[in-house]
Amino acid sequence: RRSVPAKKNAEWQRAVALLDNMGQAIIELNTISYNSVIAACEKGAQWQMALVFLTCMSQAIIEMDNISFGSAIGACQKVAK
Image (cartoon, rainbow, N blue to C red; front, side, top):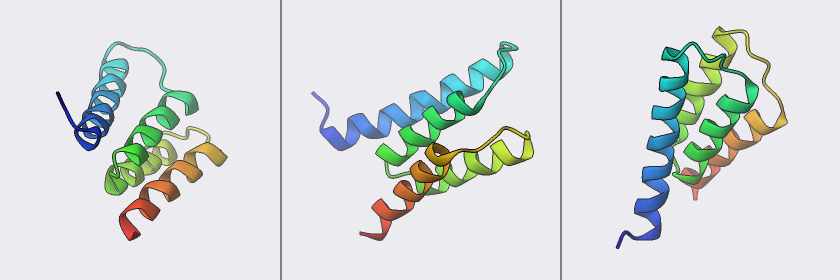
């Protein structure tokens, strides 16, 4: 049985893989799909990945919202503690 941190780590990795698969399957990536991945990165304390996906949103001209920024900030805060 996995510990809670291990489960959170696996969750963000699955979210990243799902986003990658969506892009390859010609499914339109949008604010909601990126926010889901950034939130999973926040839960897994993966601040670098959260910022990577925030940058990807900007480069893809996908609208960022309060959830996008809040989740990325939350990921950074978890590391700062």
